[in-house]
Length: 295
Image: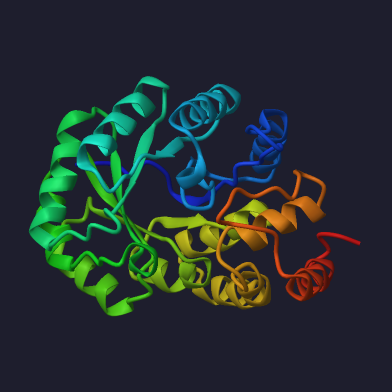
C-alpha cells in the first residue's frame, strides 16, 4: 500500500527575490519560521513560489537550498510541472537528484491536454522517476481539469500517490474518493476548503496561508485529522478573512506582500507579477494587524 508523503499542513512557500536573484538568506529565514511553527512539509517552486518566472538554474539551486536547510526535518516536495512532458521529466529527474522527497506536477497549461493526454503525460513522468508524485489540478490557472476517472486510471501507477485538488469542485472530490483506491490521497489546494476536503478523507492541505500563519494552519489540519470537525470548522471560520485577503489579487502577490510587511523578505516580484495595488495593500495591512501579524 502506498503511503502519503505527509499529513497535515504543507506550506507552498514563496520564493523571496533580490533585484537580480533569489534571496537565499531570506528563504532560509522563512524555512526556519515554518519549522518552528509546526509546518508538516515544504513545497518549493510551485505557483506560490513564482517558479514560472525563474530560470532553470535558479529553480534547481532553490530546491537544493531548501533540501539542505530542512535537513530531513519534514518532507520537501518540489514543483516540477511543465506544459511539455519532456521538460517536466527533466525537471522531475533533477529535483529527485537534488534530494526531494516527492514531486508536485501541475497539469499541462496552454496546450491543454485531453484526459487521455493527461494520463499519458503523467504516466511518462512517473515512469521516469523513483519518488512519490502528486498530481496538481488547478483549472483556474491551467484551463484543463482532471476528471475522477483520470485520477482512477493514474492511481494504479506505483509512483502516483495522490492529488493536490484546487478545482473547488466538491462533487469531484467525492467522486474521486469513490472511484479511487484508499491509497490515492487527496490534499486540499485551497486554504478555505481544508476542512471540507479533509471531511471527505483528505490528508491535509498545501497552503498559501501557512506562509504567514503556519501554526494556525497546522492546528486546523490536526483538528481534522483528529476528526474534531467542530474545532476544525471554528478554526476555518477564524481564518476566513485572512484567507480571503491573501487572494484579493493573483497569488502570490498578497502573501509575499504580507511577508514583506512582517519583515521576512523584500516586496519584489518578477514581471508579469507586480506590486499590490496601493488600496489593497492598505486593506491587507489592516487584516494582518487584526490577526496580530503586524503592528
